[in-house]
Image 1: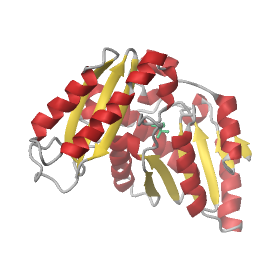
Image 2: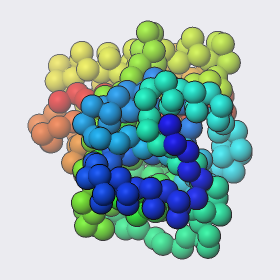
Image 3: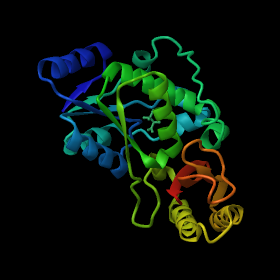
Image 4: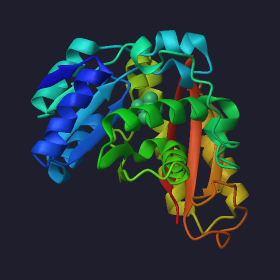
Amino acid sequence: METYTKIAELKSRLAELKMKEGKTIGFVPTMGALHQGHLSLLSLCKSTCDITLASIFVNPTQFNDKADYQRYPRTPENDGEMLKSAGCDIIFVPGEEEIYPEKDSRIFDFGKLDKVMEGKFRPGHFNGVAQVVSRLFDIVNPDKSFFGQKDFQQVCIIKNMVRQLNLSVEIVVAPTVREPDGLAMSSRNMLLTKNQRIEAAKISQALLYAREHAFKTPVNELAGEVIRRINSSPELEVEYLEIVDAGDLQAVSGWDDAGEIFACVAVHAGKIRLIDNVQLK
Ligand code: PAF
């Protein structure tokens, strides 16, 4: 596995692989603290691209809360070992000065997409995601890039950004990987206390309840019941639960309001914030 920290060196290696050897490049951007969810992206990437490249960069511009940025888990040695044994070909681990030699003052316009859910409760978050992902795409110029369905709204935003910037990268979305008790895998799970971790299984259980009862129960009633089930745990508090049209991410009020409908949730377990979603239609 080759490791690069400098853009110029990575670019010259990629030019060799693409131009001289005609290889296709698959890209898995990450913020490290890797888990099985990341490995599933890597394995999808490996099966469809000649070269698998992963980046590790905890992007400061997407954290609207400084304490959250500082608290974000960093496990560089373990990440390196995991990527190596997963057969990753190249890792890019840039410093902040490499990605942002100057302050990035670009403001993206995502219309209604970033005014709801994560965008509403974490103002500026998706602008920061778009800044870093567009910068990484510019450096790597991948044929395909891989993202997890757990970050459902992020996927919508990145697809929109790719269209706005007229990029040729194909965005591939992989299903959420879950722990045996159903909790969606997330780097933040390692920050949970033992009891919070046990109780966090209630989030996916409540979403499964929503899937089983969709269509049989009015949308608002179902949303209320999902919130009630999660909040029944003393360790958990729902920040939002939205039942939305997958196209524009706006809340629906009836099951016929959209072709594809998702339930999306953000939950506080103490200081740790967890998100999850499930397709209902
Ligand atoms: O999903 C993530 O881990 C991050 O938001 C991403 C896409 C790597 C950008 O920093």
